[in-house]
Image (cartoon, rainbow, N blue to C red):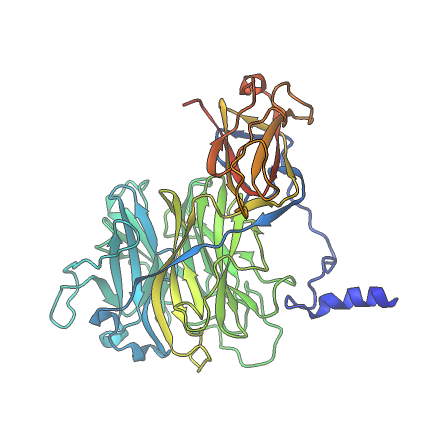
Amino acid sequence: MDRRKFLVATSGAVTATGLAAAADSRLITPIQTPVPGIIDIGGTRQQFLDDDLIASRSRVSRFTPRPKKEGVVIAADQPWELENAQVGGYPFTGVQISGQAVLFDEDDQLFKMWYNPWAFFNDRRRPWCYAVSKDGLRWEKPRLGLYDFHGSRENNILWAISGAKYFNVMKDPRDPDPRRRYKAMGENEVRGQSGAAVAFSPDGIHWTEHPGNPVVRKGRDIADSPMLFGWDDRIQKYVYYPRPGPPLATRLNARGYHEAPDRVNLNEGQLRTIGYSTSDDFVNWSPTKIMLAPDEHDRVDFQYYQMTATRDGDHYVGLMHMLQSHEQTFDVYLMTSRDGFHWNWVDRNIPFLRRGEIGDIDDGYLTPSGPIVHGDRTWIYYGAYAGAHSAEPSPLGISTMTIALATLPVNRYVGILAGPDVGTVVTRPLKFSGGKLRIDFDASLPGKASGSLTQRKFDEAEVRVAIVDQWGGAISGLGIEQSKIMFGHGVQDASWEGANLSSAQGKPIRLRFEFRNAALYGFQFVEHP
């Protein structure tokens, strides 16, 4: 091996992603799932959350906007949220969410949250609490009158039990039984009865545990941390993501003491991974399959702690809570899927939602609920932890838990970015319906705008789109030269001088975007207003 080849070969061996991060590290190359020759998109909104729509591209990069952290929305400010925190065995204090814990109720026009204070009543009973908000920013802890805390029911405690903790809630309008309108999933940690537990409620406030809990016993199918996806209308089943247990989970190649499989905590001796299970009735669950597990492309100390997800149009959007076991911290990575089981990393090197700087409310780790699309924003509520995920002393200090919010404009997970050079994106052949094409993009910020449509400065944005036939041939009147120049921000209608979409109706076509100094997020064919 000559010196140049040796330097190239060894440079990948010392990267943070591990010894085997090179592209040719696999002995066998997996086959990618093929995309249909013509994709029928109808009038549905299309986002660039994967490469399925793209046939070719040049001079463009992927661009992932950073969510805006809005700060704390709920903190422990009531005595029942701070009761006997030291009993928990960890140096924690505060309130937390760690699952699918927040939703926007379209019927009631309210944000609703179910959260867990780090507090312990008699017999280690841990309270489960409820909060609501009209605007998503200012939250109320309603006096429910359900639970007696030191002689008063003037609190927002739903209940306090010693067996199970619930951290996932969904509203299920399709269930014909009104007593099961709301469904909760959590974890029973009683020895001999440990596993996934479920509960039901007519209103999200008055709850009844399923008498047959646990519905999935700890072992192969679950070790810990059941994360609820909810009802998947694509497959017409309930879905949850358990952390698999032995022998299904990835075993550690390590020395050391590992706990026996009859223990309540089955995380010892295995890497944390993400499983997949379905149910027709929310009680009987299919055997867990491994869905996601660390591989040779991850940093060597990465573990897949848990994942929350939601549907967004044709895609599933997942938030991977990545445990970095060297420092016992988390960052959150963005993933997308077309079927809810096979996932794509949007960027596996740069977190989507990052922990804060030392001293911030989330300098240790974050545990987000699934994204909520409401109004013109995507809302991501998350457990914010100042301090490491450990009972041992850490440079980050004592763990304080709050609940915080991050937002981003709707449909702004991923963009395709062009710089000063004109970038090009050509789609695969598409079958569409509608008489108008709408483009969703963001212009780059110029040093100084010219204010001219015809003499754009080198750092000003412009977006044009042509409609070509399925083979790439021109369609008269719908070329780049006839395209209206679009600039600015948001959703705009494409148009062509002296032509419209009528000549392309009912035929497979491709879109050819030519743009510069802009991020392209998606498009949609719609009917005329």
